[in-house]
Image 1 (cartoon, helix red, strand yellow):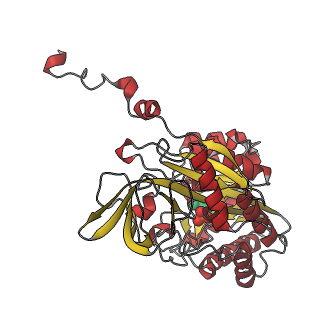
Image 2 (cartoon, helix red, strand yellow):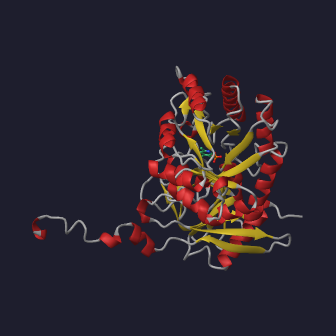
Length: 445
Ligand SMILES: *Cc1c(COP(=O)(O)O)cnc(C)c1O
């Protein structure tokens, strides 16, 4: 019998407190559930089990941590990368180039050349990028090359996460006048262009909308192959974007719900005529991680109780800046890591940053938090450990992986240490300390 998720979190917090990974010296840290990550990958594999040829890549921006990428690679996954930094992490994790897909919208000639030399798959964002690839592609390049299209099926509930609106910056906007013909011609002129790519959107996009975007992409592949009289398009990269439920513990929708929606919108998708690539991020990691943070002070202002913690905009950036779009469940624990019981009180849970809006939960009903208590921000395994904000020169917190056994035992391993003050100084120009004072001015003459 596995422990229920609450007990598991409690045991991990207790162990982290007992071993000094969380507390006065380390007031905020991230935790990743490796058993949970394995289970998520298994459910992804199972949902696509009927697809004869599929490569699941992990969207690195969702957790740009080498040990995470290596764990996923060991489970058979590749990586979707969107910058030289993400490509480097995937390679350092040992992901073979043929299992890496490069997707960024602003690839420089140099990045394109390096990806093509390595044999990394490249999805061109637009027709100008294809023209660059014409010039840069070595004749013997092993890279699969695709073209990203925007099926313009519309947006979801979060504008910033919707990539298939009419005016999205991503891909070739398929419904624009003449675009379809240009795309067909681009494939006609390039025998090595064999893939179509669409990522319809992330959090906030309903399954039907994602499936509709994939359907438009599939129809385009069929049209290209019909027009050219040959199977030029041989694979479809259907992106990621499965939304995550942040309201409670349940994983919904499941990957199987997604493949059901895809199969009903695109009946031919899984018949094996097209190899498939996926690029999931949030749905694989979000529910497999949490943040633990110490309450430094508990105070009152204007009749409102406020817990000032060490988890704020530096680690929960989107939640703090866009609280309506990115709410989080919060748990209250005492300083030993035992759940706080007691009558819920409306309180703000605030962070350490010096701006008034640095609040991760407004007016939340929680047992009254006290100095030294710990809060847990649930479902933060995706993006929260990779979308850090350097505001106030706050350090990137440590991240630890954990497993738990049936008897409640916890094993922890460091994924990333907390950034040190020396590292913060180094990335803040310490090596150039004299640069400005020595740059002219009366005293420098
Ligand atoms: C961000 C992104 C993904 C992953 O999105 P999730 O919502 O985390 O699954 C996949 N593909 C592309 C091109 C992306 O930009």
